[in-house]
Amino acid sequence: MNESRLQRLMRLRGTVARRPLDAAEARDAAAATHRCLQCPNQRLCDEALAASDAKGLSLFCPNSHYVEYLRSRSLEFCAVKPA
View 1: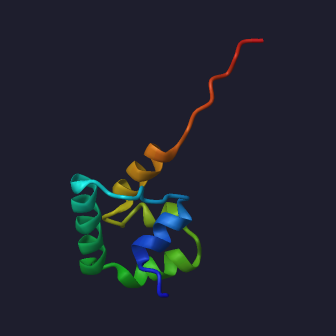
View 2 (view 1 turned 90 degrees about the horizontal axis):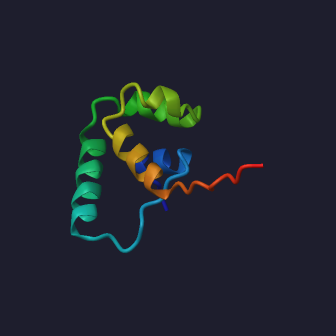
């Protein structure tokens, strides 16, 4: 199976989409896929993905905010108890 650029970016950032998607999430995912397919920076994206350069991708990727949003939703924070 061929991974899309968006899927590769999500994997690089340690992000996975929740399943199943609700209607709003499905619209957001479709819009992100469309942005990726229409992006004029695909060649640059391929180079950054090959180098695992997530920081470089964030400079030009139209989906970087979307991926970081998904990533932030999946983070869990542990409460630190005072000593």
